[in-house]
Length: 64
Image (cartoon, rainbow, N blue to C red; front, side, top):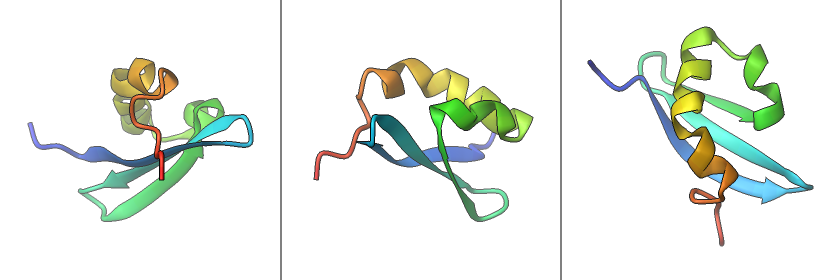
């Protein structure tokens, strides 16, 4: 199975985590918060579920 999505950037600002996920198949970038996941395409929702715990724990947060 080829990878379709990959988390490119995660930042905690304004009390919310903002994610940027790249879509390799279509070449686009999806920008959203965890509150907006239910509005995303179903396959992207499934990808977010696989990384959700690590995202919530701040594992991917940009510390720049």
